[in-house]
Length: 75
Image (cartoon, rainbow, N blue to C red; front, side, top):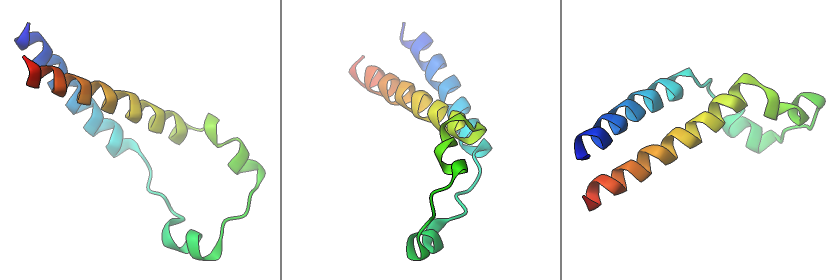
């Protein structure tokens, strides 16, 4: 049982690393905070972009990784 959970955790760690590397950098950064960002049509449809899907996948894979880490600590 512990071996199977460890294998799944290693796979999720590799997948998490790959997904994080796929993400594009946030170009606004500090300049967007100082100058302010204007709302446009592109900002409103941001949830349907490739970056939004990758960010959502990152959250789910990270959650699985954290849960598996806690389970392995309890075993």
